[in-house]
Image 1 (cartoon, one colour):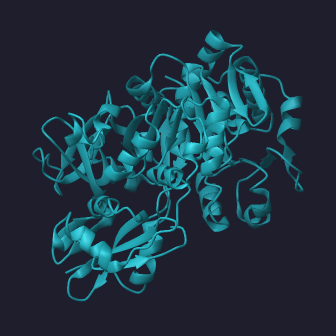
Image 2 (cartoon, rainbow, N blue to C red):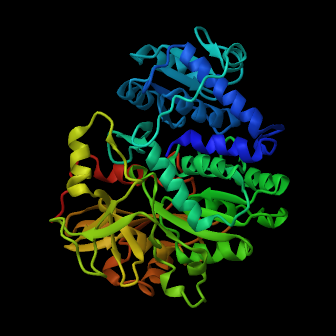
Image 3 (cartoon, rainbow, N blue to C red):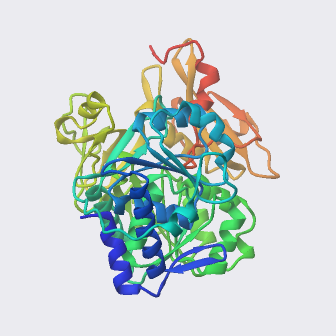
Length: 518
C-alpha cells in the first residue's frame, strides 16, 4: 500500500474529471497530477532527500492537497501543522521534527518573523500565495521552473507523515504514520460509507487534522472531487454545499452544533448532502436528533479513533442513529470495530475485562502508528504488549458495540466515585436552552474533586444554575450532577480540530494545585 497509488488510479480512471474546486479555481485529475509531480520535482531540486520532513502551515486549499501528495511522491515526510498555534508551540514542533522545508499561506506570513529565527534546521520557506516576505520562495515560481519526477516508490511501513497530537495534556508528541496506516484506514472507512459513486467532498474541517487527512486519501482513491473552504464558518459551509452540490463532509460535534444554531440551515438547498462523518468527541443523543431533523436525507456516521490509529477504531452506522428505531439502544455507542481492527478493553494490569465492564480501550491493526517521533519510551508504553493503549475509558457490550465513557484525564473522581463527563454532558444537552456545554472536575476540599459544568446558552435564551441542576437530577444520579455551574456568553476555547479545550477551562481552578484526589 502507498499513498500515491490512489492518485495514479484517479488519473487512470477519471483524468478529465474535476479533482479540486477552490473558489473559482477548478482543475482536472490530469492537471492536478501534473502539478503535484512537478512540485515533487521542485522539492527535490531544493534538496529534499528521502525521509526529509516538509511542514505545511496553511488553511484549507487546493495547494494544500497538491503539497500533501507532492511530498509523498518526492519521498519526504509530511508534517501538517495547526496554523492556530502560538509561535512558541510551532517552533517546538518544527525543531522537534527537524523540518527542512516549510510551506505557508498568506494567513501565516505575519508570524514568520517570530518563528524563523528560532527554527534550527529550516532551509527553505515556500509561500503558497500573496506577497513574498524576504528570503522566501514563491510556490507558483518554483512550480513553473520544475519538471515532473518519477514516484520515489516509498510505501508499506515507511513513515509518510508526522501528525502532532493536540497538546491538550502537555507537550505535543509527533505521531509517525506509515503509508499502510493511512491507506488501510481510508479503505476500511470507505467500506463502511462509500455508496459506489465518487463523492463531492467538502474539506470544512482543518486539513492539518488526521480526521480530514483520511478523506484527502479516501476521496482521491475514489477519483472524486475535493471542495475547499479555508476555514469553518457555518453559513459559508451551507452556501458551499448548495453551490457545488456537495455530497459528503466530516465535522466534529461542536461544528454540527454551530451549524444547527446558526439559524441558516433552512435558507439553503442541502439536498445533495448524502453523508456526514462526525467524531472527535461524543455527540449527545439530543444533538443527533436535531441533526437528523435538520438534514433528513443525510446519513450520519460516527467515527471513533485518535491520531495514533490513523484515526478510525470503530464506526457507528446511520441505522443506529434513529432514536425511535429498532436499534435505538445503540445510539450512544461508538459503533463496532472497523474491518481489520481489533479492539479490547483492559484493566489497570492490561487484562481483558468482561463485556459491560469499564476499562481502557486498546487497539491492534494495520492502522496503528509506527510510534512517537524521537520518543522511544512513550512509544513502548503506548504500544506495550502489541496493543495501542488509547487512554480512553470505555466498555463493549455483548454485540461488540463500543461505548466511550471518557478520556482517562477527563474522569472526575469525586469522593471515590468515577463520574464520566461525557455522560453528564449528554444529560445537559437535553435542556432546550443549552447550546454548548463542557463538564470538568475542579478541586473540592471535602470530595477531592467536584463536577463543574460550563454552559453557553442558545442565542436569545436564558438558563439559571438552579434550573440546570433540577434538569440534571431528573436524568442522572445525584452524585453525577454538577455541583456548580458557570453560565458564559463568550465562545468556548476550541482546539484547531474544533474540540473544546477542557484544559483551559480547568486551568484557573487548578493553578497551584495537583490533580491528586482523596
